[in-house]
Image (cartoon, rainbow, N blue to C red; front, side):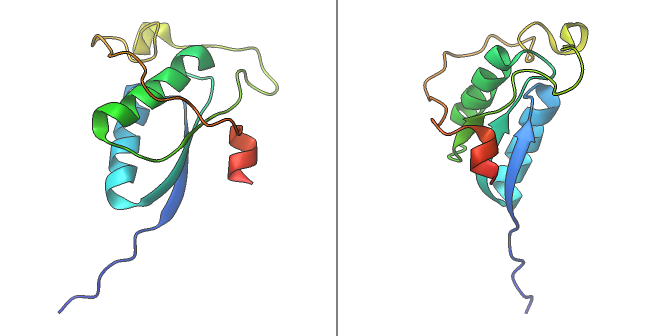
Length: 111
């Protein structure tokens, strides 16, 4: 008889492009995912936050989503549209956003 493995509790801080959506799906399956924070990165926050919300809808992830930083703290903003497309999830046509982010910001949620 094997001992059940305790699922780690985690918050995923991400800038949802293709790689981070995969990470969210895996985290949701193997961990107790208690929150997702979306920040500027692969694309502006105005795109990564909806990407996180849409990904939760598409993959049945119920963790709350929090908006994080809309720019880097000490450097000029840089995105990667040549890799991830303008939306951060270039390629598929994305469904409309149905969920909304939590009112609390990412920093407060992490604390």
